[in-house]
Length: 119
Image (cartoon, rainbow, N blue to C red; front, side):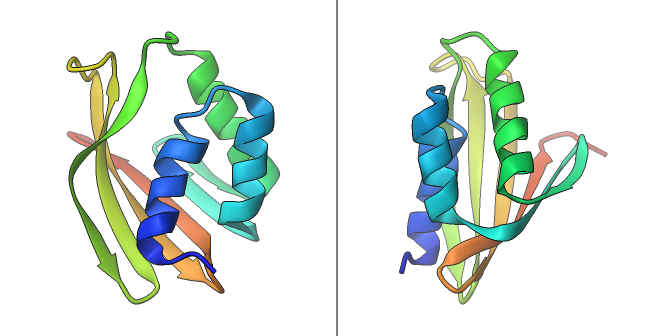
């Protein structure tokens, strides 16, 4: 069973930073609950398939040189955590944000993504 820090890592680096659909899907199945909810500025979706579609769409519309990188310390609590990130070419982020997760039974059951500067 993964701990909160490992799940933050998997979310950023094994899912949203992976352009290979097969590898990404394998990580999604290992990292999130069946009924995961994912909320970002585009809205809320439920389930692994919907989360996969969002990740694929994001990566599909950005240049291959764009990558997610941690942008500060991880915050880890009992059943929850947060990780700030930046996204874009190395050393030239075009967007910054933070992911906040809720964990149930060793998997992410809720993922909320907020972008810097969003009102």
